[in-house]
Amino acid sequence: MNDAALDRIAAALERLAPAPMQAPDFDAAEAFVWHVSPDRLEPVTEVSRIHLELLIGIERSRDTLLANTRQFARGLPANNALLWGARGMGKSSVVKAVHATIRDEGHDLKLVELQREDLPSVGRLLGLLRASDKRFVLFCDDLSFGHDDQHYKSLKAVLDGGVEGRPDNVVLYATSNRRHLMPRDMIENERSTAISPSEAVEEKVSLSDRFGLWLGFHPCSQDEYLAMIRGYCAAYGVEIAPETLKAEAVEWQATRGSRSGRVAWQYFTDLAGRRGVALTE
Image (cartoon, rainbow, N blue to C red; front, side, top):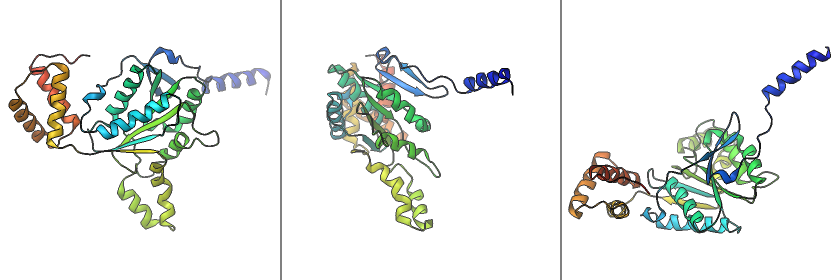
């Protein structure tokens, strides 16, 4: 093979394997979303979130996560956190609200969102974050694993870090509807078909154990549901008679067949629209 042919092959390989990603400008935004193909951290100009004090009914989990994040932002030891439980009870909202609160306290903490399907690329992302002098909350929303899903192995790179260990400037917060991140029928199937049932499920179930904090989010009571709505009304200046609010809110949740923080916000959004109140900061 002549030199010209070798040069063409080398050029083609360079096109197939682009140069490593340049170090991002972490001063460009307070939050980023990780994308692959090609690898890049997309700045988020405005994070969608509500104020921490408006998250009612989850005070214990909220305050525990805030304290953990405050320790981390100050350069002190902190735990990875798994926020699990009922849908619509503010798991992702509290992560974003805590991040905003810590920044308001003067800490330049960055939030980086990682999609579950991009977990295989997490090693490359950690390499970029490790090289920075900033501190990062790596956020994976709605995390769970189904049958034959091998992405959970990539997650261990964040939780355990392999030989290098998890970067000191990175902490992982994940949300999930499942405490053990995998469906119960998958656990039972593994136990019933494996030669060594306990070993077959231990690797997957123990993934949750690698989170230092387990914060549970449970369905709210009607009093908590109404308190959430009253808090929104006070914060945004929406006036409504207490008896009218209760009647409408209870009817709203009955038509939805559920009661949660998300349903409370959806009712309030409808109420604010009917009253001509814009929901702006």
